[in-house]
Length: 277
Image (cartoon, rainbow, N blue to C red; front, side, top):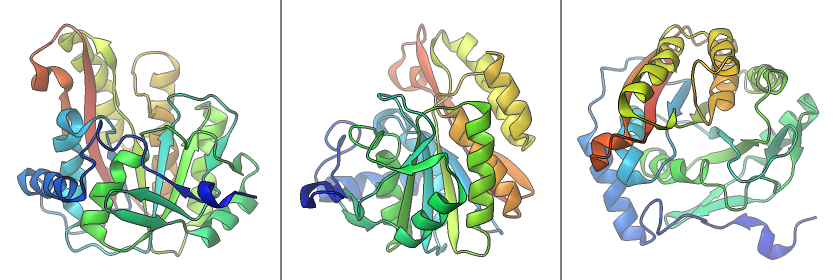
């Protein structure tokens, strides 16, 4: 049982990864969305892949995905993220009532949470991975500005083993069938390589995304050919999206931190992609 003060997950990285002032945050997101270049999009997104660094670094890349949500309405968004600070077995779903950002509270979809808990023993209702983790939180202001009212199912993967990735993807594909939902896989790409090396490594991930091939991506991650801190969430979301009727994935944007900072000796890669029918 949660204590009252634990029932809502408060912002952990407001003021560092993104502005903590509601007005400044709304303005920042609107500016990023307004500057995003996106292709014509006829089909509603079934899943997005988007980065989770500070908005200064990966905000424009994330915006290229979230700009697709102009005129989109969904009841629930399922965000699947890695755990950067805690290791635990399986997958953690937040047990409380809401996640909060400076733009307000987002209610947790408790009914969907219970269905997922019943569908997979790998998923547990726990605060593990939700306390100081940024990889769910940074997506939420984009979703709030673009979707308005929606419910959230935040999932944090404590391990990214093949078994966990595939089991989570299959469980989500089963539980989400027939619902008004959208998936978001939270990931950055390679970390702290020279720009040319990073771009080579990132290209492998981008090719696997464009091929819409979760098995190939899982293999490339396991073999060390590719890097993505949220590679497991991406694999799981790709599997779920395919089960939910997605037939293609399109890479929308790819960049790295060196393009922003001018420091190309050690960069972090970012990408955005969308899966549709």
